[in-house]
Length: 238
Picture 1 (cartoon, one colour):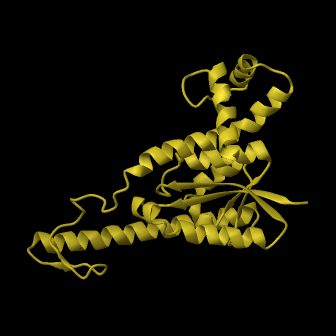
Picture 2 (cartoon, rainbow, N blue to C red; picture 1 turned 120 degrees about the vertical axis):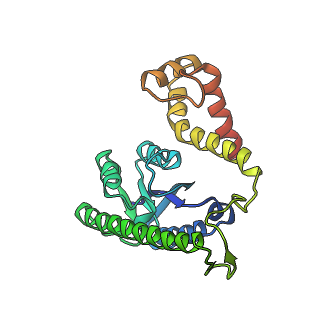
Picture 3 (cartoon, rainbow, N blue to C red; picture 1 turned 180 degrees about the horizontal axis):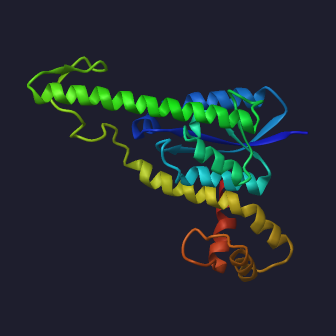
């Protein structure tokens, strides 16, 4: 029997997301895992977000795709989901099965233990970082200087007053299109099945509302919104 997976990739910064750093390494790990056995990669989702946050729309989309397709959520490393044990526990309570490429045989107890260790590590790193920044700030406040290990330059203040150095205005429109494509791909199997059963667009819209499936825009489904889902999936298939 072929195992089906939905891959989820995450990086923590906008710089990494724009440059591809981190994401490509995760993709390679997932591809190696998939190619190593009788497995099928159903879909891929990526997100630029801090691991400390739990409101991740792309992770939610990946989970929904798993539920629609019966696939298992696949991540390159356990800490790509989160270093928060409570968040991982919440995922399992939602009935989501997931596999980490770096620990494919892990059971739920193993995941709990590893997540707890990872959370402790995150808290320790945070404490060390705050302590180091506090020392640097105190030195600068007293007229001293600090040389950045990354750039080798002397700095006189903490932070980045110029903001991000990566400028990608095209990502806004691309992100909107990508979200629309992902949503259409997620709900289209159900829409197509209802269409095969002979339901009209209006009847399908009513059925989706009954099943509490949220439309891409607005509070309720319209016949035109149903048609757009089918049109978008047909366009992407060409």
